[in-house]
Image 1 (cartoon, rainbow, N blue to C red):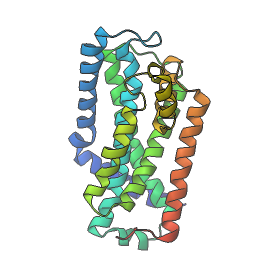
Image 2 (cartoon, rainbow, N blue to C red):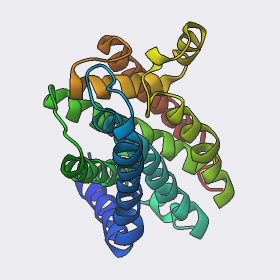
Image 3 (cartoon, rainbow, N blue to C red):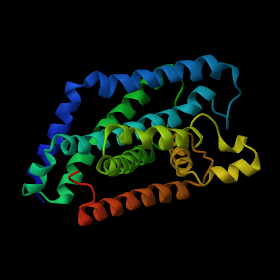
Image 4 (tube, rainbow, N blue to C red):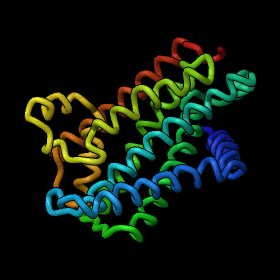
Length: 253
């Protein structure tokens, strides 16, 4: 394992984040805080508790995962797309660096950025609403695995995309609707029985439910199913990336 190569890729990506700190960190945090103010305070004060949890506190896990998933996907997709766009991907592929080390370097940077944003949002939310974390270890684990899985998916999108428009298609048309329909702002138990069964086909439901369980000790889906869904999603993304490098699919163009 070429640790120096991984460090070089990681440092380069993190330095790029520091150069665009406002767009990378401040913007998503501010946007999420506005969600807390509007939905948690203004609207939440008029709503009943959900599973003995105030509405403002209830939406915290969903908002964190909403932001983290989009940021993970965006960071990873742009990090691998830019070398393709400007042509430096050829230098990287000709260097004595394995595909595994390339993936680890880019994904580690994307996960670090997303985890940082998620933790900042969590700390900020604690000043706005009452938050209790019943299972802090599992909260960190689920947050980390969610960042890894969406970063891997973003890496796939970055390789697949031929232009900037295609990079935004997946987050805007697929991920965002799935997150909103996955129980970010409500419990799926409030839905009619038919729609409860339909939402179980949405993989985001299991991520949000598991993350909410780590906070409040209750969830819409059994926690074992949530962990299994996260690990399965991560494994599928890893297999797709392995196949991409094995076949060379769209790596250079």
